[in-house]
Length: 77
Image (cartoon, rainbow, N blue to C red; front, side, top):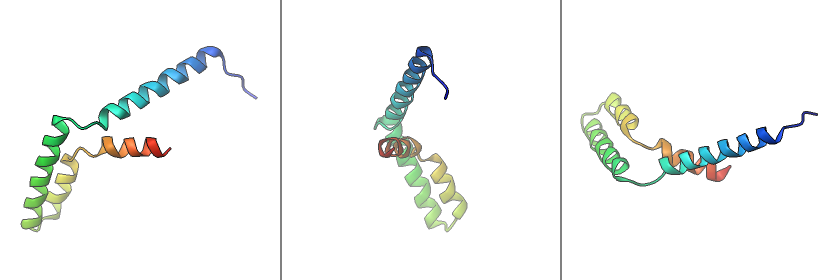
């Protein structure tokens, strides 16, 4: 029905490559990822010991898990 121009096809390929590169970069293990997850673990432990759901939810916000989850989603798709 609709024909795509070669320019649109190239733009789509560039966009797909950029998305894949961004997801792969965010899903990689580096020092910032490690430090933030260690700090989130410490906050979550405090929340469990203090019996505070709000602090545990705060630890979930601190944790840098969106990158690896996005990477697994892209790999699955």
